[in-house]
Image (cartoon, rainbow over all chains, first blue to last red; front, side):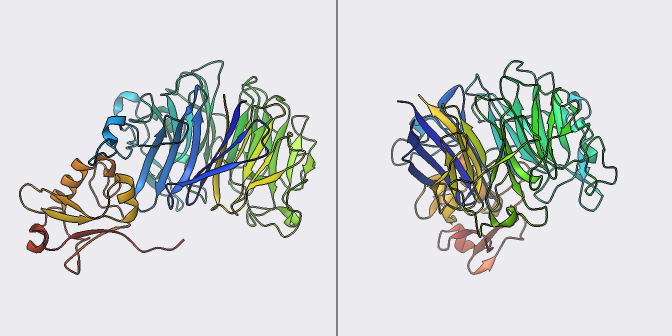
Length: 394
Length: 98
């Protein structure tokens, strides 16, 4: 029977939760890299045993870790198995280097962005927020980083090159949100490998059709009336998350700072689908694995109160692609609950019925094996959860 | 041999136990010790000082002989006691909460 792996990044380490296809009993492995922030832990769709992790620390910087055996062993890319043998065995891979491209040959990339105080600041690498492996090549992986940029590796994470054309898409106007100037979402169009979308806080969404050489802002229809002096500016919007169903790469869903949005033309235009949500502020948004019009969000009270309204943790599901939402509460705390669910902390598995998972800042990981109808905690006392991914392992 | 004591997280990352002994060629400066350390443990590149500028990361400190050498230039010679291995160079993660 196939197994399901849930990969959890937290503020103090990584965890791998495993179950068989029934998803009733879960084993917890971890913490991996205890004490480090694991911003993202994810697997390659092309090889489920190839896992990548972003291990980061304000003290010690950025390390990329890679596993080639489904998470049993990990090493910085560039380490060969023979490097680890014997009393002097040690990882030989470098802690990873993310150097912004400032050469003229890529078309005069911008080297400054807007800072909180309105001044222009040079780009400075801080951490990798999100890793997006290629659907077809286990050694190819994209990294969304802070300060906002997109990097690509084609050697399994050993070396990284910036796709610097992105910063030419009005990069001088991008500015950090409260969480930093971060590129947190990368969506790959599985039908057209050169087509990608990224989302940046606080800049907006961007699309490339040529593998990342050139990009254009795709934010028409977004309104940020309390966050921007020009509410429908071309860039500057605080997009918290975008998602798509792989079978319909022109239909995008977005959880913005405020507003849940939808695009039916690959980001060329957006319209609001918040409908009857109790609040349209939130962070994660995801799509059902088999139903492209079924979407999930976790409404949060407000941008100044990052917890669920009324102390009730509720996932909201729309089966109509937005506008009409139903609260999913069975198995979730319905009183005195004041946790948040961060943007990368919700995922689906491809089982039938579809499994949904999310982690909270309070360290709970909740799972539903029935498309969201009912939930239970599969881990309860982890450090604050930063990211959740789900894999089906043959 | 120069003795270096790493913070726990970097010992774990480099898979070393206890302190590290390094052969340092030429004057024993902070920069020379870090060059030797990174040559022997490539995974530590970028964790103590910036990959390219070689500037100390903000929350890293260098202590030896009960003195703080964090703000000394990288090419300043360290005390004889460090060069001879009598005293260790401590690489320390700065105190912080959370």
